[in-house]
Amino acid sequence: MKKIEISAYEIAQRFVGIKEVSGNTANPQILAMLKLDDDWPDDDSVPWCSAFVNYIAWLLRLPRSKSLRARSWLTIGEVIELEDAEAGFDVAIFKRGGGKQPGPNVIDAPGHVGFFAGIEGGNILVLGGNQNDSVSISSYHMNRILGVRRLA
Image 1 (cartoon, rainbow, N blue to C red):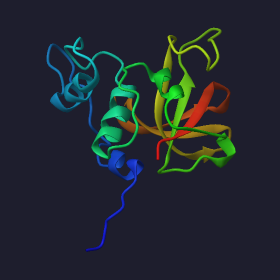
Image 2 (image 1 turned 135 degrees about the vertical axis):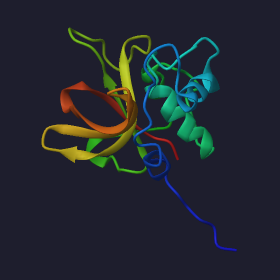
Image 3 (image 1 turned 90 degrees about the horizontal axis):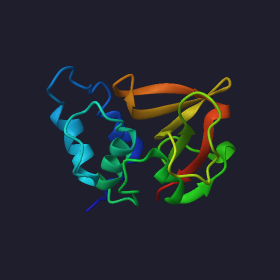
């Protein structure tokens, strides 16, 4: 029997367009992603980028951080240089927020994580969750990158 191979990126693409629900309700898919790794989230208004990456990794039995902290992904997988990053295989971790942010050695700080989708100009394209309250492809300036990790 032929084994079918599919990448985390290809699975993640299936979720593009899933959005948070405004008001007192939550999108049940996003809430399930959050609850996979922590009991406290009661709705989808909390940061869920790491929950999305963890969920996709869980579906494919890939290593995962099991944390809702985006920077927790800096401790998972193989370190990859940005110039060697490949769409479909790698996770990109970024600084989040304004002002001076700590470097990659600080896990307990604001961050963002998603699947590396390529480089366009001075920006890194990322397929991720909680990007404009949905799963989408967004771009982040290269000066915000903290690291790239290969999960498999």
